[in-house]
Length: 584
Image (tube, rainbow, N blue to C red):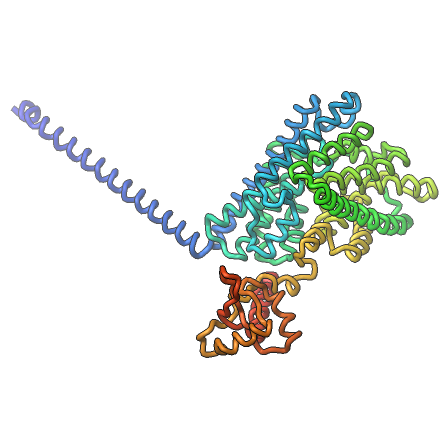
């Protein structure tokens, strides 16, 4: 009787069990759904806080890591793009030996490729930039100082494309300038998404630049210091950790793609006869300072001359790079070593595989080619060409020095190392990061003393003959005064309209008094900077100056008064904020 009774109860027990399992499943699904909704709400809340209050320290380091990876990928991709397009245009399988290969190409092909490339560059820049000028490192420095770490995105993308075409089609410049600005575009996009303030924006810009330089040259230490020394122009402790994280991330991206190899694989080891040769490296540093000065002056002269000719004959700005490309093609018919970055020639100089006359001639021609490229508004940077010119200068000096005193001299190629660093450091205005980048590019740390001595002399000399560096001199030519420091450029960041006391304010003079001063020609536009307004106080010795806006009719209407004491207070607050950031 028991067994049949159990069998009778079994369906009910199974239904009860199924009900319990379904209920448990529903409970689990409900809990999971609630957790997902809670996680979604927390993510939304974190994103809202991130946008409106800025990232916390942990979030900031994570963002720095992501930016470092993105900038590293962009730098590696830019390099691969140049190699692919260069190989396609010139028909060579190994772009590292393009110069040797180009010697056997038909002359008309050597002439045609850079001319057509320049034409494409001109069209791209004409359509993507307001002035037809390729953006580079100087614009990133300006963005760090004046626009809260932001750079132009549309013009930056156009400049990246233009530089890619320039370097692939025979332009005689370097890839570090476009890579640095491309990194700035990435960090600017992130800053816009998270609504970053000025300090955060500048730090993220430094992270992107460090990662891009590190990935471009497989040099993490120099990449981090380049961002601090050249772009941010301070060594604040709060910026060091995220910039280092980004630099390491960029280097890892590079090494996953290319392996743990140095940029230059050298056969000649460094050998220094220590104290005896140090005076020679001091002299080499002075010579390299003059060479770097000639290099920079040549570029500025070519740019000024090109602008004069363009305006004189009415040449459309989009044709200017095409003319420069044609000139480069003419030079490349006889000197194919000017094509592109020029690592093959640099390696030959560092290996001592060039005669004295050839080294001098190649340095002169490369300088002229770089001036044509930059003056023609094509694209690219100046770091790699300065390495090449420096290596050739150092080799020429070394050949002379070792022949005069062979019994107390090391290898003449060692002078090429030192010359390479000395010219590049003087051009960039970055003795620390350039010294380190030479070490990391070569993998030879035994030549440190020679490089440091030469770099110190070249930068000490060149920085007094230009506005500290090539980039800061570029900005000075655009009336952007960053070389003298924050005390010189902070006034240009403050507008009279934002500092004035509006009419109707109890602390402001009356409208009748303002109109009387305006009638005397004493006024300042609301859009004017304090840089333009402050000299007026010294000239007229007024307590305040009316601030005016121009109406559509052309008349000027007073809207407030700029007081001298308010302008000084605003300037002092800006100085204090800058000092606090640099020492935090």
